[in-house]
Picture 1 (tube, rainbow, N blue to C red):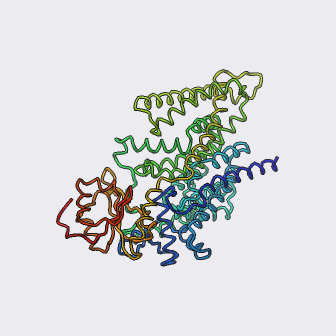
Picture 2: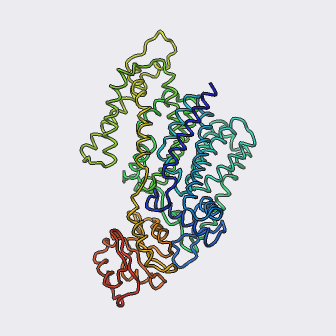
Picture 3: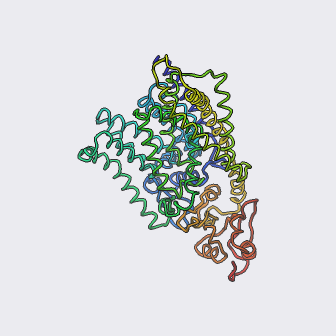
Length: 573
């Protein structure tokens, strides 16, 4: 039996490794998935390689005329990538291979976590969910710190659970080290402390506060990140450079309670990128059937900790660009999926799939398809969206009612007592929803393969680069100057700098005027890479810009201006 289980996990690992190798070998060009983050990480690695290898001094390209030191997470991934450059030469795929290695280790760690927490069949189901997770696949070879964070994040939970059970110093030390590195890799992962605190309180009550080891664990986990982020903030204070830490406001405000867009964005990201969304019902089935079981408790508390962070950082977490942050939901979701599948496999009654599952499955599939198409803005108007949402809500409520009514019948061990209709309907639905969840995961992974939405911008950068001397500073159109509510937003776009291999300044969309451009020229900018869509935000700006500065080159989405004026700029938009 153990040998068969081992073969299953080997097969799961190979499947996960294969999926995570999709697009592994493509360079940092127009096929990037997260254009801002990947190009920032790639530029920092290149600057370590070319300019300054000191680990504590990461440098970005949009540095203006300064040294480029930037506030960011502990720069393990870009610095390690630069080391690979020094060993093997400058090959952009080196960073992807490094991140891929983190992803493969994460698979192994999660398998061990699933086997530690769940019965064998549930562990296999949870691991399959994890293997096929679109978000886990998405971060598995992108040049971001998230892959390292995800590895240590799952490892910290496994080590902590073992320490709770055994009290071994090895697990204690591993918990402290993994937790500290997790927060150093991504500050938002600090929510893991909520999970640890609740589990400790469940076991020891208020007595946990009197244990020295608990306080020492907290200090070992938090002091290194606090030291690093305090040090890194100095780069923001002195140079004004930050990768979304001090230069963007992420946190909840009063508008969270008046603007449904925040919670809607979070829910849609969770449903369509984590749960798919059929997995929600599988997870609910498991929670209702196994609510008091330890796996359900761990997964629910973990998910609640993640949800608390999403709400606190809702200004970002509800945005489309932040979808990859929701990878933190994948481990608890996978565990709940495993709980639900294990409960289904041990249910006393099983349907005749040839009759029951297709009927229930056709209805469920229709509802899910309509809801999915509606929320993904694929051609439905407001009326059909409302009907789809109502149908989904009614269907989910009906299944919840059936869950409640059938729980006793499904867990009844007396084989002489027949299962009632509610139990038969619920089990039939679950037998369809489990594979449907996995199919939808695969569909999303395949749909995200071979990204190319930045190809036009990349082609523009390659077209412009020969016209710009290697040491000339650029001015490049950035993102919006602020959130709609006026709070700070990180507007610095790195990809044109990285692809053109130049340094320089960003100018945010709302502040683009001829006098502002002239101000950057006085600080050393010699060329302006202007995004056409941004030029139209200020009436008359593009005409005034063309009249003031000569156009060097132009492509469908950008214009390259020389900042040597035809004539002195006099006012203008």
